[in-house]
Length: 201
Image 1 (spheres, helix red, strand yellow):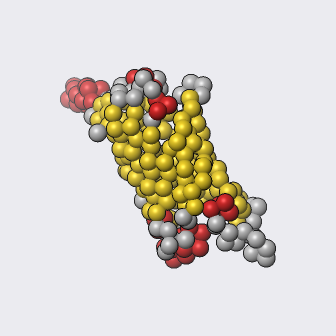
Image 2 (cartoon, helix red, strand yellow):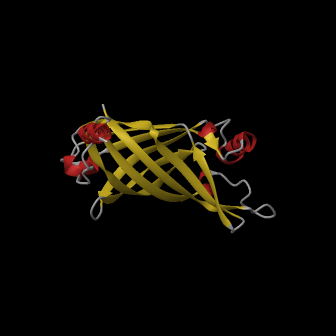
Image 3 (tube, helix red, strand yellow):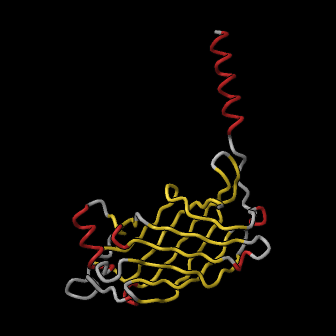
């Protein structure tokens, strides 16, 4: 019994000694510098309504991003995102490749990019970010609602987390496959759902 108690105490000390402090959601606590995407802790999801019944969801598995940050001027931050259009994944390798060609025009436009142009702070840890989305060779502005998940410094290094959501009409980028009768199965409006952690260089 004493050995079990000693083992439990040792485990609690080890865990307690390595646990990180709770993240700060105050942007001023995040140090200035360049931040790069932690690809193992990031997801990019697109949702579009199918036949008006439910949302059809796909992932874009390969993307990278980085941003510069100054806590004295957070609105001046600049983010650059690059997405591999061929990494579209709906769970079926065959139709994933077909949809990448039909919806994303991957053969002619293998890369999707987003470059921020304006950031506005909202209430608490929320805000909006507007940027130029280039998709199928067309560039148009898109605005994302962003939530700052927090900043922490621990055994995994200095890192910050963000959630973002936004919507755009795919027809404005020339994506009209299955949009018009008689094959009007897929809606025009696309919703983006982004979760991302960044590490400080």
